[in-house]
Length: 308
Image (cartoon, rainbow, N blue to C red; front, side, top):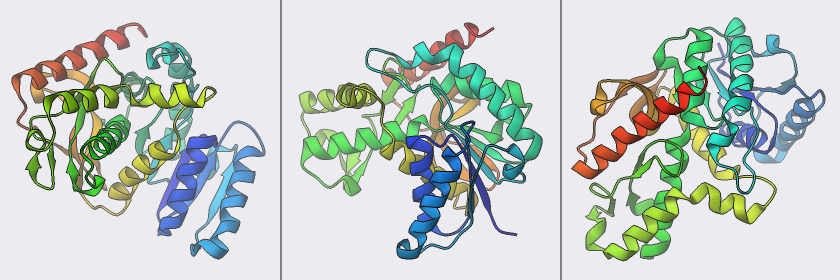
């Protein structure tokens, strides 16, 4: 049976995800939105690109949840995007209601699906998704760490003058400026520790810029937020699950004792495969990094309390 991925939300991010995934040419795609005509039009446009884009898969746009039935992976992008001056936390109550409604409908038709949560504030939305759906914790995966890691690696490459393909660096923690933990202790460029290539000031500058990476783009765009890098980051996760690649990637997972954190969704290294989150990996962190990660867990718990 052919694989099936549903993307909820046909805005800039969702439609870009659809386009990137279509070019992979290994799964059918359903694009869902509440605005009639929007997902249908986007799906048709992307389908027609297959003639010259060398892909031939079924892409369907719909407002009917029945079309999403038996999906292997469902990506939830629904929600209000950030505008200049807004924090991800400002979106809390509005997006919580949206995510709850979306996942309740989705689970009715795809109870075995793995859900990738993209809506902000992402860490808290993972809690909403788990509580609303009754799914197993391995089925709920937050996207944030993939995007934050991409930004961190990009800024390291720009600051050091090296190829981004040579950069190995991770961002753990929460998907907010205050709770991100860009790791320095195990960051490297071409296998060389980062502090042997970059000075302390450059490293500190890069860490700060990575933490504010989303806000930087929101400030430049004025009327929206990033969508291309988030889309590419998300499809890497989809691919690891659909193709059972078992890649170790940064993602938001429910922790139960790992890193000394309990009952909180926090960005950590995980193995992603057919079963969703198949393993949580505990990197060796510096004392400062571990403390920051635990503080991120506490902050997520506090944020979730505001929804109760």
